[in-house]
Amino acid sequence: MLSLPSSSSASASALKHSATQVRALLGANLGICLARAPDQQRSSRALLVTNRLDRGEEANETRGEGENRNTLACARGPQQRRCCFSMKTRRYGRIVFGASAALFGVIALLWHDADTWQNLRQIWSFPFGIVIGGCLMVLLIAGGIAMQYPRTTRLASVVLCVVFGCFALACIPGIIKAPTVYAQYGSFFEQFSLLCGAVALNAATATNAARAVDLGRAARLGLGVCAISFTLAQIFYLRFTADLVPRWIPPNQMFWAILTTFGFGLAALAILIDRQARLAIRLMTLMLLLFGVLVWVPRLIAHPEAHLNWSELALTLLIAGAAWRVGDLESF
Image 1: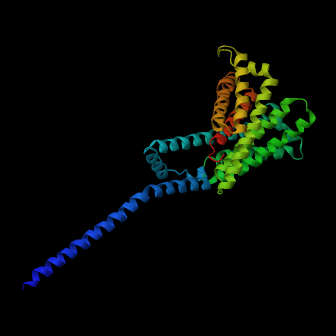
Image 2 (image 1 turned 30 degrees about the horizontal axis):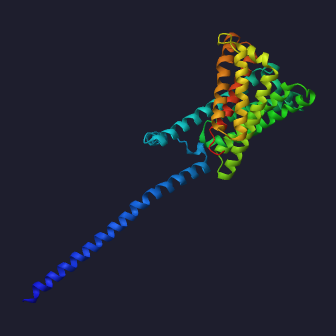
């Protein structure tokens, strides 16, 4: 009887010691888990970025319930809000690029004249040129519409690469016939800038990260070369450029012609050496959009019967949309 209390106290001590050890072990494991949590979050974010790059931005954009989830996620912090803003600008750029492509295709099918087709009328001189030109315009319209839907964006990018590649090649005969006229080179690089936009669209939907980087770099460098051409075109035709500036904009037309020429030149330099290239592309995009709004929209309202005004507005917005697509790339 006297030994029972001693045994009970010993058992109680043993149980208390075991409980202490279990709590210590659980605390240590919990501490390890908490310490690992930030690393796991960082790894998850890195994996998300990699997957986003692999799948392309269009594959990440969803409709309906998916957009609501994105909106809620974007409201959680500054980084998420920046992500949301970036997604919106990409969507707007795709709308501008696609809508202007469809517009140019429609007016080219409606009006089969030199003012509308401009240097692309060289296509008519090829065997079955009228049929080929019409097919290319139909593909241009289809590509402009298809790029608005994530599931068909990649196919649209391939179609537009083919169309704009053919448009650029169609300008080469004009260069061969008149090699001393810079307008021929300018037309080629205008079409080549559209090809750069289509390549950027393809890069955004590439399923391979390395391929996306290569395509993005090619689109950036190509757009930089086109910006050089835009600069030279305004230098060679400075008086004509100044005449396009609305007279009501102070201080005078020549001031804005010279300023925009410097703008194109600086943008070309920044893009080619990859110093603040994204900012340069976005500012150049803004300048092109202003050209469309301030120069061609008023002319179109004043003279809607002039096919050249429709063509120039669509082409200006097309180039702006192409530059917008390149500037929104994450892969250069």
